[in-house]
Picture 1 (tube, rainbow over the protein chains, first blue to last red):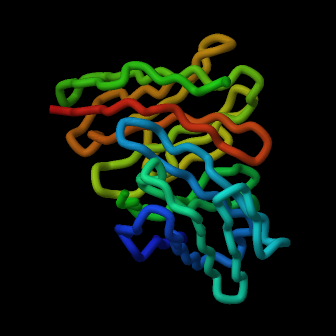
Picture 2 (spheres, each protein chain N blue to C red):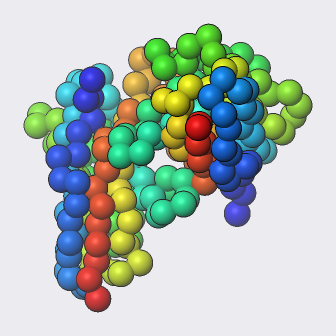
Length: 114
Length: 111
């Protein structure tokens, strides 16, 4: 049951360059998506979200793009900084059930090289 | 900044023992959740809680699991008789608006 998929387990990027993290989903009922960042020994920290009525949401260095027809979203970080090194999770709630339980991807470990 | 706090950070127990994992959600939040992450796997939903009752639960959340909000601040997850496969990180989350905020987790090690 892989409703949210992150196919790249790891990504390395030079400091100052763009990081692009990808996420695909299979359930067409998802209409809201979130990105979380996780450092070791900490819980997931909310980063940015996007509703399906939009195709882009920007917050500082972070931009999330949503392509509903392709069931694909991506997180862009520019410029990347060493402090961005963490595991990034894509997640989506299945709101039709009345609860907001999140379906998570398996995560992508981003390493930003100074 | 308000945060979700979880205790203990690490719990070691023998198989068959009961454990209680504790969480203090953010004070004005109304929805609470437990998730777990087995080492090397994805974060999985266990249960959601609203208005002092379970709102939804996954198939992982069987009769060995229970949740409780014993007072106005704590939210607990109890595992009645732990199994080896219950070893995982357990995360509590509380929801404000559309965003779930997570605690740092409790690492449960069942020996």
